[in-house]
Length: 61
Image (cartoon, rainbow, N blue to C red; front, side, top):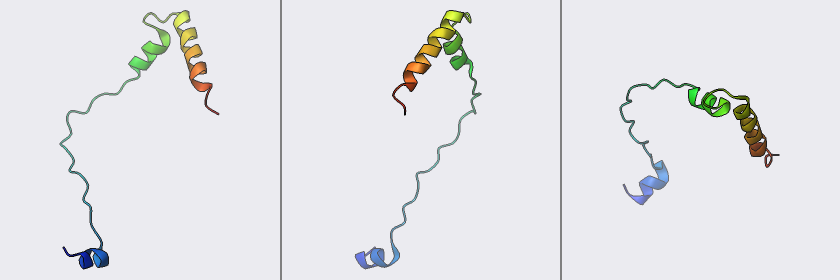
């Protein structure tokens, strides 16, 4: 391609090729639930998660 062709027609950029999809994984909220409730679902773990959530939201305004 010459410079004049590029100026008149423009450039075409092609996207990257998709790689073949592997097995579709099942998405669950189990990890998040364990993080919030603790391993045994204790009240202390819930309180601690609430404190973390409040602390994370402090700087957002």
